[in-house]
Length: 73
Image 1 (cartoon, one colour):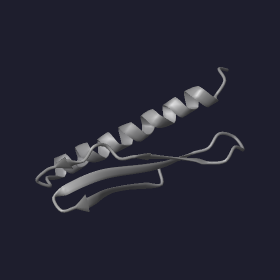
Image 2 (cartoon, helix red, strand yellow):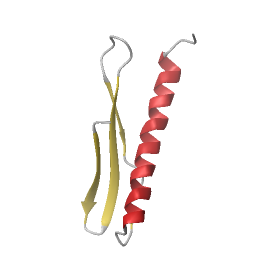
Image 3 (spheres, rainbow, N blue to C red):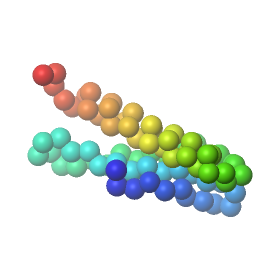
Image 4 (tube, rainbow, N blue to C red):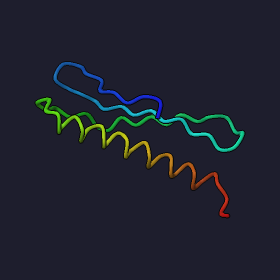
């Protein structure tokens, strides 16, 4: 993972996860996940849920990429 943060604009917070994927010697590929923004009160549990949603979204895109670009062993 390269970055994990919350972007904020007023009361709206958007979790962001950025991953870097590289297979063998191929160029690195960036994966960015920004789940739909939500308004919340800013509790710690809500922040953790937001981060989890961002990381789940990024990992889903990584798995889709790997499925499309890797041959079965």
